[in-house]
Amino acid sequence: MVKKISLLGATGSIGVQTLDVIRAHPTSFTLVAMSVGKNIDKALEYILEFKPLLVSVQEQHDAERLQREVPSEVKVLYGRKGLIEVASIDADVLVNAVLGSVGLEPTLAAIESGKQIALANKETLVTAGHIVMKKAKEKGVSILPVDSEHSAIFQCLNGESEKDISKLIITASGGSFRDRTRDQLNGVTVEEALNHPNWSMGAKITIDSATMMNKGLEVIEAHWLFDIPYDQIEVLLHKESIIHSMVEFTDTSVLAQLGLPDMRVPIQYALTYPTRLELPRAKRLNLLDIGTLNFGKADFERYRCLRFAYESGRQGGSMTTVLNAANEEAVSQFLNGKIEFLQIEVLIEEALQRHSFIKEPALEIIHEVDKETRQFVRSLIQI
Ligand code: NDP
Ligand code: MG
Image (cartoon, rainbow, N blue to C red; front, top):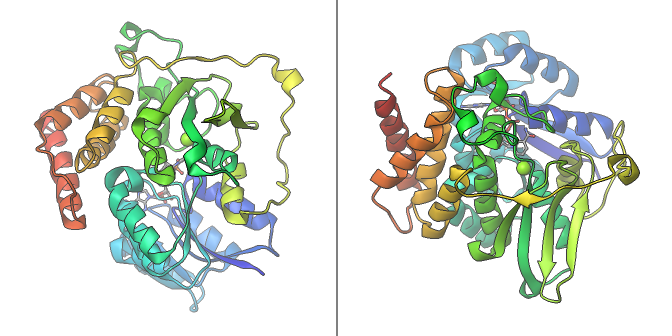
């Protein structure tokens, strides 16, 4: 059976690699719908190659232009409504690889329509994990991880029982500044921060790796995906990014998933689960070449964002919405050259401290908190 795939964020780092996987297996996958942001030239190229029925772009004027340039059977939509339509279309799987909390509503729409979700967009679970997981359970929808660490854990848990898990061990490369002390972070440039040692990814997640917020978001993501308390989730520095994560069981056994860093592996696994397919042009792991694997402690003072993530995760409710929104806004301002690298964590801390905790926020409250937090962070920067 050919699986029908709908893809959010087709022009991004994960989106492009998802298209690579689809392209490699034409008898297994077909693209029926996709969304892009502002990269209309790429969108046009992909429409001509993959012939989806439905495409959504971020802005109305881009949608109007694109509609004139594509074959008439392709429907072009835009904005929030467009993302929801792409998520709701008749497909077997939604790959959610859009960036940021804008991915929440389409995830909920995809669950509503009963389709399986391959989730890269971790912000969805950080901002509203309680709503997403509850709804997925009610609808009997599975959420399969695309994030490499969560895919590793998911693979290690295959055939295991939840009660036998003693802890999850999430590995972290340490990002662009892993060999610097805190003091050496003063005055680092955007260009230096974007230079990740192991992975080539979108700009926002590369900065999140440098601040270690990415690992913090992943701890929260793991909490929701695997229903594991924060006390049983550990972060371990591992600079080679060969062990993608591990699970320790009650009998002290530890299972790990290994491989060279290549996001197409977890993307493809989310699409083929519970089976596997060849991955064309992928390099195989040779441990003799690697020689040594290193591990280190993830220090909460050196990596304050990791501490914020654990603290807000443990508090739960609206705190993780604030964490995510403040981080999205601060990172975007850093990338725009408006603030220093170390200000990212200062702004997040201020947003968390000022917020009045709401226990089980409904969707409207999540949207409100997200918006207010971004405004608050912007007001601190005075732009
Ligand atoms: P990119 O920045 O490379 O791509 C983001 C995609 O989302 C692009 O297609 C972009 O469109 C689109 N987009 C951005 N903002 C909007 C918006 N407001 N409305 C509609 N579309 C929008 O990101 P990545 O691929 O790196 O990351 C995507 C998600 O996957 C993130 O949640 C990230 O944390 C997660 N992830 C990424 C990994 C990676 O290796 N890159 C690894 C694990 C998780 P356009 O470019 O056309 O403007
Ligand atoms: Mg990851």
